[in-house]
Image (cartoon, rainbow, N blue to C red; front, side, top):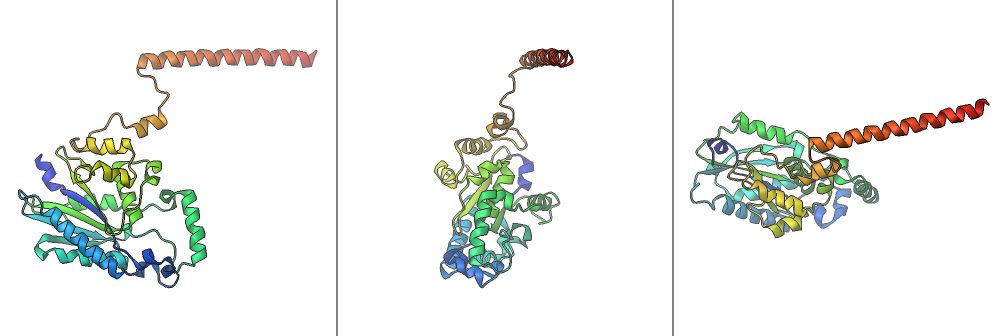
Length: 296
């Protein structure tokens, strides 16, 4: 691995909050503001188990014993409680930073939610699509500024890991922005389970991939298409900044009519011009005949 990659986090890990009172009973939103919804007893245990899994993952490489972790957390009570339980698995020396980040909060539906109105609102959201209904901006840019400006005062000999404790929709939007998925691909993704962990790991070439830590079956279960899974596998060894030329969901959607070469493109263009000129000439002839008929 190049020396530049030592400054990048080895892993960026997305964690959804544990089971909340709202997950268990949606009527909780009618009496409690969304941001004040608490974890259930089961949710607290899920968060503790997630912390143990994270600790096992981060300490699994014997060649990198000096690993560190930085946490980013949504300001909602259920995410803060999840992080608190996750933190039970870590010693103070391992945690180099914690930041509460409002831009990774849950989708906003208002203060108190009237049950029937919420049902109608969610139907509208389904019609618009989750992506178009709300889109959190700016967090990725802030994340990279933390890295570029070394705001964490990171020792380059330590292996850095970012853990983002947030919500299901926000996690999917994060992945979409990072991997440049289309809105259609985003809408096909399944929501992560409570306290589920999704790991983006740095490959040998300097790109991040979900396919290093996760199996193809897991990616399929999340809703990734075969093309998206193939792209994740390609990223395992791709070099940072490298462009995947056969990225079908860009060229296929917009340029399916493109010629394979400049020569074919010029020939097609000439043919199209001739066709248009013929159509124009015929139209003018018809108009002249029509005018003559009306004038006679």
